[in-house]
Image 1 (cartoon, rainbow, N blue to C red):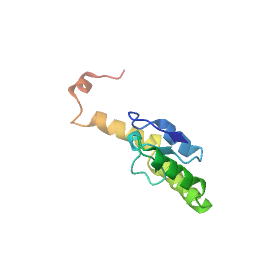
Image 2: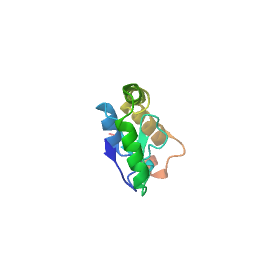
Image 3: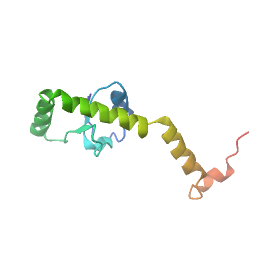
Image 4: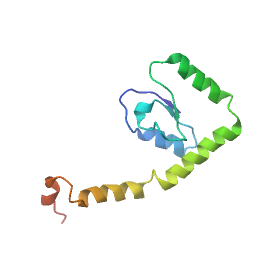
Length: 107
């Protein structure tokens, strides 16, 4: 999956592609600049983008499968709803949360 953007931080389409077994290729501005299973391409450098894409086209099967395996593991261990819900709950319950949460009541 190829997605390029200047201002699209953390698009969920990258996680969807990982779940489908596709190898995401994106600009670092996506928020996935340090994810080993995601291939980054630069903005505004077409020769380098072309080089990266061509190298993937001829990459050994083992390298591509390794990227897929890394992504499967990352989805199971890090990019999942349990972790997301835990993080949101922790932030809401934190004493550092904004005052607006103090008046929030659940029925």
